Length: 184
Image 1 (cartoon, helix red, strand yellow):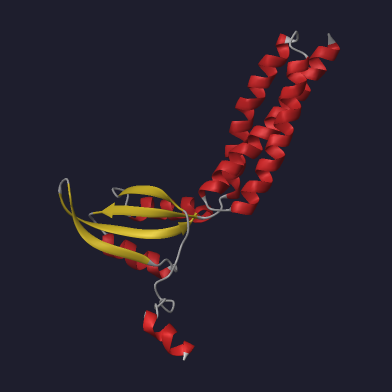
Image 2 (image 1 turned 90 degrees about the horizontal axis):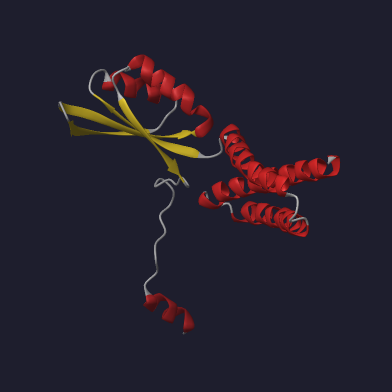
């Protein structure tokens, strides 16, 4: 009896580990982090194949099935919690505001945020749309600020895969005939 319970707990813990790694791997794949994703995938599958082979060898221990499923669910939750704590990367924050939009923009800019604004038409008339990229770890602080200074503002949050700048020297393509000149 204790042997079966210990086996089931080990299955749970191994499943917790491999699904946590898998959840993090999916997040990193979506952010374009190839090497880290591949490394996590290696250990995820290594753990999985060991666990599955052990469960198949012990098909008469149905309790292990429950622990296997429980480890999967707990691994998804743990992976999401870890990813949320790491708060890597940026999000795009789009704020739609009617009142005090100018003050909100000025204050956000004074805090160092680069933002873009444009006029739009909302349900009840003209609005100002404010768009800015925010580090995920700073998002709660920025949202708290927006709620304090413009409590009626509506906002949306989007994942940002990467950031770039148009202020860098633009890439210019050489005409094909310049290559021919070098061959002479």
